[in-house]
Image (cartoon, rainbow, N blue to C red; front, side, top):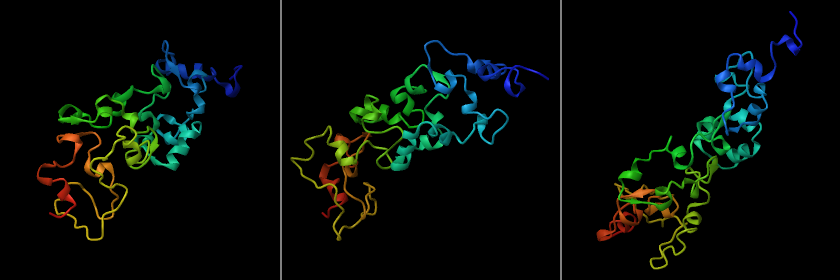
Length: 231
């Protein structure tokens, strides 16, 4: 019937939540802490009485996080968003505390391979160096980026950051659409359409291949060239 705390609460802040959630509110040694968690402000993210969202969150997960992390919201709106970011920030981040910076659940490729298949890395004959080294963010951005691959730059600009020579000895055009008389092959092993723009990944796989130079089709007998050009 009476207490020194507002709203007649038995305790305030994190102490109240710890009466049931003590395994969550205990701070781990040397952990990175989410500011609302370290400040004991559980109500900043959770509704104390009820919610339509799992974890009695005060809002839908992504909307809740971007309420503070506005820079991430801007990125999600201006470029192609990473599916994991739209599904919920806790796909990659711990909500309360963790041993890694940015509260990441894992580091480097281990985080990416929680969702993305890594088997090709072990079985393919040829593996792109950044992919082999687990340096996913050499080419990809974590929240949003250019195109469906969330790239750091447009394909041609991205590839030539490392492959500066390009096709100096074999100057095949890129950044152009095929000519009006282009005939699409029935098999279409390049998965290339008459309205598509030629890029590096028209002919090359970005991660792995069983063909040298990460080509999508072998060059023996002109096979790769004849995917687009007439014999």
